[in-house]
Length: 322
Image (cartoon, rainbow, N blue to C red):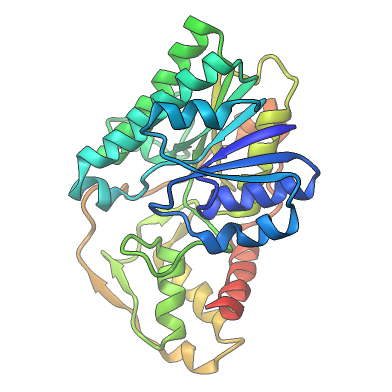
């Protein structure tokens, strides 16, 4: 296959590029390095010189999008400005990238005759819905500018399917974690941030009482979902949105316990590091748990890594690399 991965130098994107290349596919990475990192893809450029191509460009520029899709068959659209707090601080840029850039990619993909457009949706779309587990057809009102942008993506994809015949699959990611997720950025996700703090014998700050819960999802499960999305031949599976998760809920207090357990295997003093509790974070959903029955039924999704299994792998990677 010939696959364009937008945001291919980012955490999820670079893992997708690596897996596709290892399977013998041709991959083009589009990234402007606003949040992506060159070190994520330099090994790919060295190891796959004939099948991996880097294009530096911005999805907010239509010309870049058209050049990126030229000659490609499939699009894995990962490029976005993530983070709820970032979107609250700067909603305009989040909107420009996540909606304007998304629309550019849809138009470019339509015009290039892309076979299927697979994109990163978000569990933030469930908003203030209190139902658990989260089922694809039952959502609430968004709680942040970021959540609005990701829901609008789903609406646009559906309209392009019905109006222009562009096949799509949206993957609502639930708190993805794993190797290459950056612990140093201003908007670092909770797992790499806590790992970094514990490794430095510093106290991580839990927002609230620690009983908020998440369906933490290991990167290899996400890779599996993306591959299923671009290869499925089930006509009922396309033009759909799917929860992409493991289907298990973990509180932040439980997460801290697991991290101490796994990191203490490398440094026993980490077990004595205390945590600090701060105020709840604006825009956060209290609880998140995915129902993955739809993905199992239509895409034959079978996640291989539980949260604990994935966390043990992630901790090993961080210990060796940071």
